[in-house]
Image: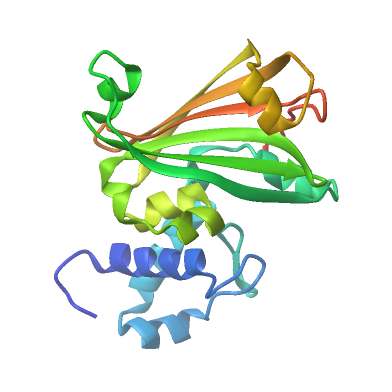
Length: 233
């Protein structure tokens, strides 16, 4: 391993990347400290510091005499103590599916919110989440122009936050705003509902430099299923 940066940070980043890629799935054990020393050609103290970093961000849990267990493979894991809503639905034994509806490059109007966030160009993709095969959440995501080279298949299959991580962005924080909104005819058609009121969640995700790397608007048909939040303590 190259010695051109702080070694334990490099080891931690490589292990984190391996967790995200699925090499070390949630619930499995990382290699032992001795094995990691050999894999990375580093000292025991370097390995221990790397594991401590991952444990501090709650990606792994280290137990004396039992090894290190992978707890999470979410790139934004350290941002929130809340379980994701889709995880909650799946734990309730409900079938959740996602479907890509649109992917296009936009040139926002100079007076628009999107221009203020992303400048003269951004990427828009629209996705539907289905609950028990029925349309439930309509997402409109907006991303910086740097995402223009991401293939449609990736947007269709991958988690948004995994895509953001793979493009080299590190989300430092996000904010959510909730409101009740009136559904227009197009939204009713997409959600296959006659309901006129739904819940809207607007999210902004911010990187370390203060740049917005995601702006999204999500419409939830809460008449079909309530929005629910669970917090870890």
